Structure formats: C-alpha cells, structure tokens
Amino acid sequence: MLPSVSLLQSLQPSQWSAMLVIYLVAITAEAMSGALAAGRRDMDVFGVAVIAFVTALGGGTLRDMVLGHYPIGWTQHPEYVFLVIAAGLLTTLVARHMHRLQRVFLVLDGMGLVAFSLIGCSVALELDYPLFVVVISGMLTGISGGILRDVLCNQVPVVFRRELYASVSLAVCLLFLALRSLDVHAEVNTIVCFVLGLGLRLLAIRFHWRLPVFSYQQRWE
Image (cartoon, rainbow, N blue to C red; front, side, top):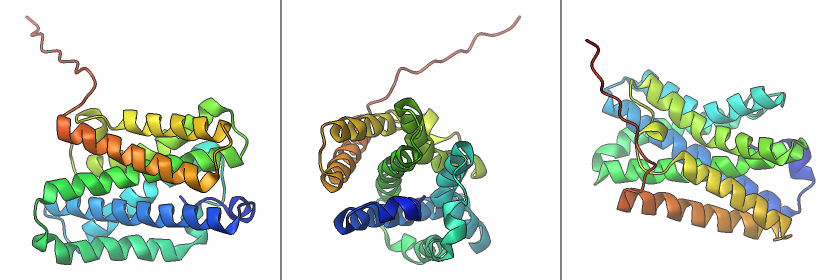
C-alpha cells in the first residue's frame, strides 16, 4: 500500500516521487496479473475486477492489519481502487493481442512482488518496528496479494511451487536495509533494489532456479 501521509511528508520531493511511482507501478502490474489469472479461469468481468483488486491491494491490507497501521491506505485513496479495477478491465481488452501471455504474466507479477516488498519495508520502518519485523512486513506485502489471487483462482500459490519467489522478496528486503544502513540515498536505494530484485526474479524464471522440493508419496497400507 502507499506509505502514509506522515511518511511522505518526511521525504524530500524526489524521494516522494520515487515512492509514488513505485507504488503506481506495483498496483497496476499486480492488477493486470490478477486479471490475466482470472481470464485463465474464464471469469466474468466482475470476477476479473475482484481478483484485480485483491491481487493489487490485498497484501497491503493484510500488512496494515497485522501492524496496526490504520486507517488502511486504500480507504483514504479511493482513486487507487479505481486505478486497479480499470487496469484489470483494460487487460481483458488487450490480453488477446498479447503474445507469450505466460511470460507477460510472470514479468508483471515480478514487478509487483519487488515493488510491494520495498513499500512494506518502508511502512514498517516508519512505525519504528524492529528490523526483523520490517523484513516480515516487506515479505507479507510482497507475496500476500499473489497468494490470495491464486487461492481465489483455485491454484496452488506460485510462491509455493515455482522458481524463487518469496526468496526474491526476502533478498530485496535485506538489500534495502543494508543499503539504508550505509546511508545510500533513498531514491537510489529504491531504484537499485527494484532493478536487482526484478532481475533476480526474471533470472530465476529463465534458469528455473528454485528451492529444494519436498515430495512425500508414501502409501498407507
């Protein structure tokens, strides 16, 4: 979700712009990935709108509830609700003209994963939570929307079954905090983490990097 007004007021204009841009990229990309997932399940336009909304705003909503960060961001900025629903519905019009739809889906999802992870860290830092909680907040924001999307679309969540996903969120959060501890400029920190995080996610997709898989198939007599 978008960092609160108090956080934005504490930033320099260039830093505020970077956070706003990264947020808009995140919700648009995740709304489109949600719409594509709904389309693969042959949902009607209402279903597409709901899945787009949950995918884009669900992670931030859960994070704010866990951290006690009220009011929840999108309730104060209804224009972002209109944006994600519009992005989801627009995707239904252009999806048939997209080539290699699966790759588009994964790239959009990766952009949302990295951007939300960064925003989740920023919100927890604003609330003065310990660094461990900051990392959990980033990961919760990054992966929860995708989990909700996949559950509602009756799929095993991508975070549990494909190339590095939650691990990318963790790496982004740790890099963000490491660069922050080195007093790297906030905007530079955000851009570096976004580019490297998205690059790691795309490399994981390209080369099928994944965590060890646990397969248990014992039959009971």
